[in-house]
Image (tube, rainbow, N blue to C red):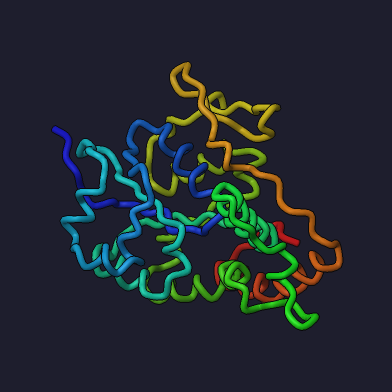
Amino acid sequence: GSCQQLPQTIIIGVRKGGTRALLEMLSLHPDIAAAESEVHFFDWEDHYRNGLQWYINQMPFSYPHQITVEKTPAYFTSPKVPERVYNMNQSMRLLLILRDPSERVLSDYTQVFYNHMQKHKPYPSIEQFLIKNGELNVAYKAINRSLYYIHMQNWLKYFPLDHIHIVDGDKLIKDPFPEIEKVERFLKLSPQINASNFYFNKTKGFYCLRDSGRERCLHESKGRAHPQVDTRLLEKLQEYFHEPNKKFFELVGRTFDWH
């Protein structure tokens, strides 16, 4: 009785916010069927041109009582995506996971840096991206992705705030269970995920999952150490985000413990 169907929930972002951890944790729930890889349907033209049937074909097989979820973190910052999602399903429930914008910038850089290292390609230091002519380089893509209020405004043109649940990515790392409980409530799922589903792995330095006696941790590419950044430069970055963060808090009617 299972079939592939359009997702009723999408994890829209943000890149390096903890989307993979969120999806893995949510998958502990028996009523969740999650697409394994990032689909990039709404933000990649060659995928979008393939139409909705192609999109359905990327989804997992699920039962009628299950919620199908896909995650593509690039959706949040892509200007054309909100309207496209809205045109597909106006009652879509969206999950957005955010973390401290400065930390997210460093994570963003770290991912690209390691991708280059694995291919034995050189990659400039983070300072070379963050500084231009002695000033903070606000044109750096990673900084733009952390201007949450700009991207959020775009989503709120199409979806009411009560259709977008914001997961605190910093809290999800430190204490995942309360954050996942909130997600269960938002998706109107029966409370099935328990505190016992999470255990702290001292070697890795983050929480791993326990599911019916089976233990699993996120890929070793997760939780990598950030580059050492000069304190003054870090302060400059945090200072730059002060106003945008304030605008974001006003927009969503909620504050986060960011620098």
